[in-house]
Length: 159
Image (tube, rainbow, N blue to C red):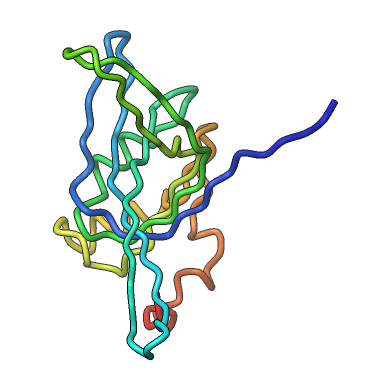
């Protein structure tokens, strides 16, 4: 049997607040718009930049609370790390036109914004940071188990 891999890792900023909805069967899902940018120097020496927008889907399923975490703690402009898989979907719209979309189905979400950057204040952010790394399997890996990850001296990281 041959093996394959479908894995996406993104670090970017939210372009809007998460859009959260409930499905007919009661599952909750959050849609995130995440921007990543790359920069390079053109042939003429001028700096250029290109921004890509990614549609990220976070589900609450199998004990996972990714959609709830996104709704409660993420805001427009926040920096996030997303790990998941890429999916391509097609559907027909009302005018019978075939539509296409590319989505990242999140398996893991880590909040990277510095303290107090979200509108809810530092107290709410600290509670979010305690459950900052949540996987789709419902495993929470609190960052407070790794005290060096919470050192305030690291707040001046270049990203």
